[in-house]
Image (tube, rainbow, N blue to C red):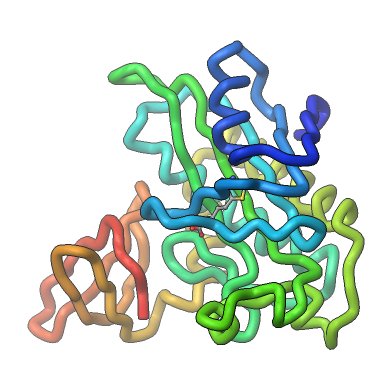
Length: 244
Ligand code: BTN
């Protein structure tokens, strides 16, 4: 991945750039990266803070030959790949919070946003956007985020990392897991995801716009849905929510 790399100093969002390139038939593995995003996009239509010089903001175009309902598998794949890419480049030990936050010491250090272009029954392109907080200092985050967000450097006693090393490690890990996905399917990715996820095997609260569900997180399904066991033994499926 990244053989074709479009690097721009400033963009609205690398997701938008990647969508445009995917529409122009750019091959899979193409990466769009930027130092500054004026309007970085997060999950659930939230903004994503992209302070220049501190992090890595990039989007990867993939073209798996799958049905649209399986696209969330690529988000879980990316979460595994980013977690492993970070740990092999830094020696830190991040974990995953469902669906795709990457945490260090309970605070978010990376986020993943998956979008797709598709026909009714076939995916044309999956755009995986990865935002990695690398060299932020505490003051680079607004006060309301300081207790929830962190960076690799902050979790490394303030010592900065080379952003290029982290990118290379994450892209290599993405490429290896994608190869596994294409040759062996989703099963091993799901297993690895469940090993790396703090959410699984604990009691959690899933808060969405329509309701709040509490339960014991048993695992995820083939398509990334979180399974919460209720006190009466029934299983509630969580498609989209924030986990407390
Ligand atoms: C989240 O946790 O809410 C997902 C955050 C995804 C942010 C990345 S940064 C690169 C790419 N471009 C965007 O506008 N968003 C994603």
